[in-house]
Image 1 (cartoon, helix red, strand yellow):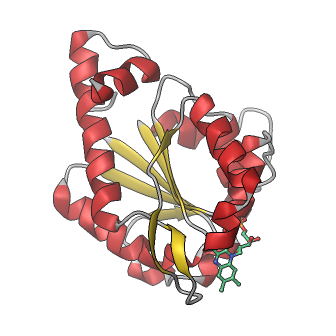
Image 2 (spheres, rainbow, N blue to C red; image 1 turned 45 degrees about the vertical axis):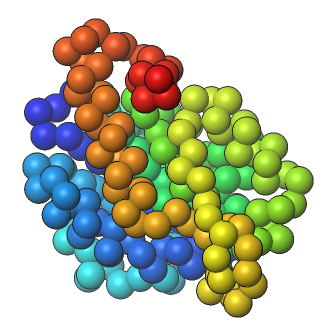
Length: 205
Ligand SMILES: Cc1cc2nc3c(=O)[nH]c(=O)nc-3n(C[C@H](O)[C@H](O)[C@H](O)COP(=O)(O)O)c2cc1C
């Protein structure tokens, strides 16, 4: 793990993506030594102003600047760079894609190529009825079965005015989780914890 922890935030097309500038700001304030980069889906860009975010932002089109054998492949470079990946918000569409192993954009290619020894956190965010659909539970269980760590959604009045489960966890909770997992990664490193499962277990005990 790099001395300065490298956090890859990944953002999908949920209305909760409006919180991305705040989340990155809070993360930077919480630990100014963090190196942070952002990966976005095309649809997530609808929800926030990229000028409000002072970190590198990678989009699908950046992946396709590749020319020749030997050139870096962005989704592999980003997974090598990152110590931890946090998908927030994770919308229903990308949840379904990841659960089924699809990799048709930069974000899902990083996830598909993810190094299982590193933590991957996800914070779902969707409409209450989307959340309550039986397929959501199955897909979330598939992701946790892969060893990814859920930052559970919460109940509140959603942007669409429905009230219920499906809102993304608060920015504070997400920042806390990132800090928590990085601390365990650093601690685990010196103690010899090698796998994400061990990191997860040490957090749970
Ligand atoms: C205004 C608006 C708000 C949306 N909010 C959500 C949301 O909170 N959660 C969700 O799962 N999908 C939401 N969607 C639908 C996703 O944007 C849509 O499924 C999209 O294809 C997701 O693309 P992506 O997963 O590649 O980012 C919303 C769509 C619109 C137009």
